[in-house]
Length: 121
Image 1 (cartoon, rainbow, N blue to C red):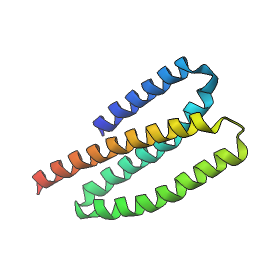
Image 2 (spheres, helix red, strand yellow):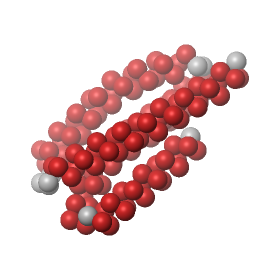
Image 3 (cartoon, rainbow, N blue to C red):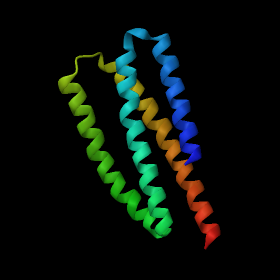
Image 4 (cartoon, rainbow, N blue to C red):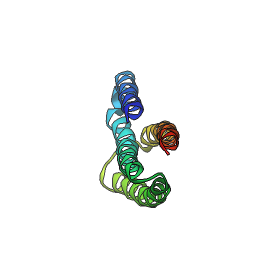
């Protein structure tokens, strides 16, 4: 969890720096960060809970989480495009960058968690 917290703080710093350099796109950058951040944080929380119950439950949790995130991201983008007037290019660039970065961080965190769990068995 500590690794994900460091990554989240780093992503927040990148968001702040980007918003400072591009003040006209602050809202787009923020909303591009918000969805991937909450999805990633929720995934890590549920995977950590599952890992306490057993290593095999991690795969089941990730599979269910993948389906939920597909629906979440679709609804998130749809709601943003429907109800918020903005420039879509900065939003999608921000979303894509944070989506990739935070999912890589999730993968590394889950890999480290799996390695530590294997040592305990």
